[in-house]
Amino acid sequence: MNFAGTKVIVIGERDGVASPAIAACVQAAGAEVVLVVTECFV
Amino acid sequence: MIRPALLGASTVLAHTPSLIALGSKPSREIARDGSLYSSLLDHVRDFPRVVGYAPNQAFIGAIHPREMGPRPYFDQLIQGASRYARDGEIMPEQEFFGLMALADRFQLVRLAPSLAISATAALRDHPLAATWELDRLALAAGNVEEALANGATPIYRAGSLAATISPGHPQDSNLNGAILAENLACKASGALALSHLLAHHDFAPASIDYVLGCAEEAVGDRYQRGGGNMGKAIAEMAGCVQASGADVKNFCAAPLPALVVAASLVAAGVFGHVAVVGGGSLAKLGMKFQGHLQHAMPVLEDTLGAVAVLIGPDDGRSPLLRLDCVGHHPVASGAATEAILDSLLVAPLSRLELRLTDIDQFVTELHNPEITEPQGSGNVPERNYRMIAALAIRRGLLARTALESFIATRGLPGFAPTQGHIASAFCYLGHARRALMASQGARRIMLMAKGSLFLGLMTEQSDGMSLLLERNPRLEEKG
Image (tube, rainbow over the protein chains, first blue to last red):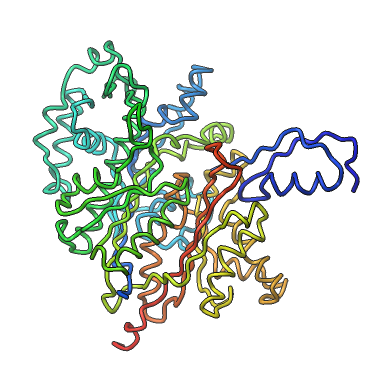
């Protein structure tokens, strides 16, 4: 998957996939990460 | 080394529907849209419906979580359920307001005279009545309208002003009425759990050497926002006159490091008996209330939860806390789920040459899904168990087809109110102790908790800790 030229907002969840892990993936695919947030819903 | 053991555990709930409006989410939403307050009042539960609620009965140990029956639980109450059970109780609101007034050493809590009288009368009939200085409640009775006019935080019951909490200092935002309400609710519920623990297990209060608080409140003033020592404040209220204390903070994960610290203190011989206590979180009352209103359900986050456990030297029968099987989440593990679970489960078990399939029960965050699902937060324990099962499959310990049975047999249904640290394995310790002491019972139970450190904006990291509880080998020798 190629994210080159895209800006990405990353919203992760502590009990699912946390945002730094998602950000690392999309950055590796060429995205520009503009916001990284991890939420906790409990 | 002294082998540390889990000598007892108690769990209590305080039914506090009048405090829901002070919860963080409801207070913000009601300030935005005042009509929500009447909707909230229309959907609060009365005390019998709270006592008959199967997850609450599981919480206080009357039934095992696997015995809760079909959902929706709120629609299928347990007939004849009691407010008291082997692990603790569900305390009604008027008694709990009396307890909050007793927790207040500075006469900041004021009760309407009628409430002060009824609370005193009810608490005089309580099994733990001798623990409390009930005559002090007369000092809390007073003119609540006057206190409100002077800037106190109001608490309304059935549409009338029932109690107020005055600021501790006019210029200190860390001692305002709302924060003191949170702290006093935490102290009162924590002390109630500790007193039940001592009474149920026949431990003399003076035999406790140290009390570790592990709840969520930051107790302090303007110069030291999280100064702490709820542990010692609770020790005092429970009559543990020889105890000192301290607090362990780690968001929702705090009970696990507190247990490890308590067990380490006992193992090292620093203290003989260490209690770990977590009082309830007022801020989290009604956190998901809008989801409940949208689904025409009762507002289920109407109880404060509190847990107290006692760690002491091996008594030959109580489960052992295996300090050689503690998992932690190092910085290097980062945020990847598999790396975190490796650190928390695989690594500590490997030290004892154990595998995931050698664990009879995994105890994670046991939030009641009936509370979380209507607001879109899903089934938290099931999600955790699915990940543990996936880890076992990935490591070749489990066939893919065995995933559901792994979850059903080694996992647990959620039953805890969404009280963060209380739900994080801590609430299950009464059940865990029984399971590990029962004839033909469990041999190993792994506790695991996670904390959302990133919410404090000091790091993007989360944290977690795990600890193995093991059946006492001397139990078998005794037959």
